[in-house]
Amino acid sequence: MTRIALDPLVADLDGESAALRAAGPLAEVELPGGVHCYAVTHHAEARQLLTDSRVVKDIGVWNAWRRGEIPMDWPLIGLANPGRSMLTVDGAEHRRLRSMVAQALTVKRVERLRAGIEALTNASLDRLAALPKGEPVDLKAEFAYPLPMNVISELMGVDAADHPRLKELFEKFFSTQTPPEEVPQMMADLGALFTKIVDDKRANPGDDLTSALIAASEDGDHLTNEEIVNTLQLIIAAGHETTISLVVNVVEALQTHPEQRKRVLNGEVPWENVIEETLRWNTPTSHVLIRFATEDIEVGDKVLPKGEALIISFGALGRDEKQYGPTAGEFDITRSPNRHIAFGHGPHVCPGAALSRLEAGVALPALYERFPDLDLAVPASDLRNKPIVTQNDLYELPVDLG
Image (cartoon, rainbow, N blue to C red; front, side, top):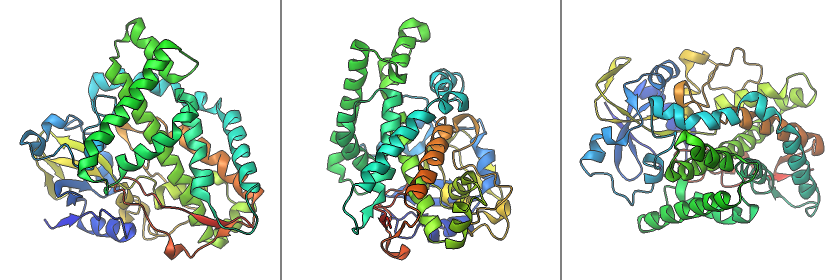
């Protein structure tokens, strides 16, 4: 099996995803830093593995980890071993840790957040409208980032004063270019910041999910302080990164497919279709780290060996022709059916999927209603991905608001 080295600079994500599909359904890959693992790259096999109880989140199963081959200053250590939370356990323990978060983020409860999201969106659009006329605007920094960060922070009870520091630390947390000597301190600083937030909420509880998690632990659900801190960090990280990329990717897709943009703005095709097709075609999450095989598992005509690590390559499987047909590589907002798994599948499916869809479903129509002549300020070929192997994340999205 030929090993494919994932590019730490993410210079050509589409080309890399195509190579992974061609090597699939199970490809042998090398993560930045020379760490070996396997990637599932086809849709059907990904669904199979995501519900297979022989694939677990316990890092103690990983041969390389047990042999001491994964250094604590590896830039991706925070994604491979993020501490105890619903992300890193399975079975009954996973259900226990996930239950309160899942209850808070049901479709019905998320819908109650609509009015607040609309207000935050309108405030962001007002700020865009007040910027100097005729100058390009980084839509990612000025619109796509603040909205989901404000929404998830309000939900979790995180003060806006912490946003600059969170942004700085998460930039290092996700990047493959963080110098190894800075990784331990970055992880310690993230832990300290979220511990402080939890301690503040314990002293001064509010109407937020962090306070609810603390109260539940005191009422007998037995969440440890570590579990609460790690859950908060997980939700804040995942709750804003995915939505930022989704909003950016939709705008990029529509601006590079003007006929389809026209159909959306004319009301011929609903925004829901645009969002779902973007989730499939240019997914916000390129690879999800990391699961481990408790025994040899057949994947197509290949084998995922016992004790080896597995990543889910959503960027590759989102354009799997076996699932989506010969037009899998095309952006088509009329595609039906469109049964992608961009938010995962099985027990660990993303609990924040409904919230991300709602935020995009509010923000994008409002953006184009306010700025119907919005256009890219640079050729699409000049847009560059940040060095993040897990997120499909641009450095910036320069636009002319029109």
